[in-house]
Image (tube, rainbow over all chains, first blue to last red; front, side, top):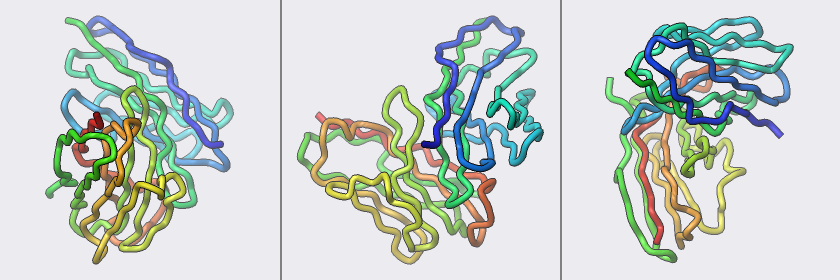
Amino acid sequence: GDSVTQMEGPVTLSEEAFLTINCTYTATGYPSLFWYVQYPGEGLQLLLKATKADDKGSNKGFEATYRKETTSFHLEKGSVQVSDSAVYFCAHCDNQGGKLIFGQGTELSVKP
Amino acid sequence: EAGVAQSPRYKIIEKRQSVAFWCNPISGHATLYWYQQILGQGPKLLIQFQNNGVVDDSQLPKDRFSAERLKGVDSTLKIQPAKLEDSAVYLCASSSPQTYTGPADTQYFGPGTRLTVL
């Protein structure tokens, strides 16, 4: 069935380090892909999205490219800040009804 | 613009009791979703409404869970009777200004209700 697999956390980085969080998916057809972020004590927020192959989503210095050939949507940021500490969820949206299928989440902790 | 509102924020009950959660979506949003997020996992869809009709309830445990969206606006999710494994955060989300326009419509999430079943 459809699923999303993320790299396991927690991930601990020093400020200004480079971030990669891996995400791969299985789906029928070509779903839309998303990264959501959950800051401590807050609800889920959309970080970025891509709707077709080779699209690059970007926001707040984060980027992810829709790779159809590898069924991946890895999240990257060149220089993380303490304020980026949060749980990051990769998700895809089926093209039938619109429900999101989430990965298990990756906790990121950035130390000063 | 006001976001998705949910209440209560926290609820503690004993097993076999009943509980209800309320959600008010963003004004004008036609599509409403209820997700269950168990600790350490990603959210899982329970039910999806388009206006006041059910689009997908395939993952809803219908022997104990029920949901309604009267008049296509507010929604309530009920559990009766609750089990220990129902302990989770229940998230409500909404999307689509008018009608469902495609899979890339952004879903806006509420803060969630954290349920603890003892």
